[in-house]
Length: 296
Image (cartoon, rainbow, N blue to C red; front, side, top):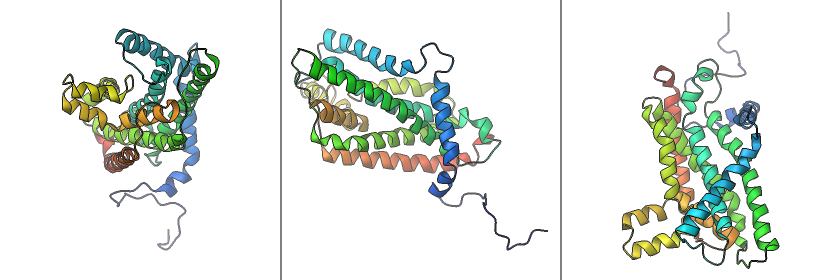
């Protein structure tokens, strides 16, 4: 017979708080999270011929296509003598991390329903592990960007005005809140797909559209010019300008290449929006995990 005053090591009980991230519990399961991170990295390109080289091939080929289509054919100027390939690679490197975080966390419940139904652990560990594992991929692609940056700036005879700025110290802030933004969106979508499966089909399509509204392959100044000329609706210009990813991409280009827009007020705006979406996503995620097994 168990005494009522017996002290238990761990107690699993229904969550009572409206917002309950419980960092203590997540830290206790840190080894499990690291295993999920390792699984995500190792199994992504398992049984492929090129393996991790796909980390490099995708951004490089995309940058080449963007350069040919948008800069050579559409004649979009990067400004300040910055090589168009380097301009596009900067945007794609940032965008890929956000996209992978969003897409990777948007089907958390559906993809992990078997393990969620068999064993207990903090469910939020799963989407967090996706964001952390994608950080490794982002680091590799950032290294590729640095290599091409050195090549264009130091080893080519063609003059370029690309130069890093002192504001480069804001890069960790950009990366952190970019991951938080993708995590928040992903948790919201993941929670909704437990009831509305159509959303899972719309995510990939929607992400592609969002890329064109995030200044990945063109400078923000171009949109402002087209709006002033009446060639683009003003509402579209406002949406692109205040899209958090537009600010992140433009800021990254400014601190690395010296082109683009840098605004402390907009960075604060990105921090506020990312934090808000993360909290909303966390609330919905915590609510959904209590009953998702009955609807997924």
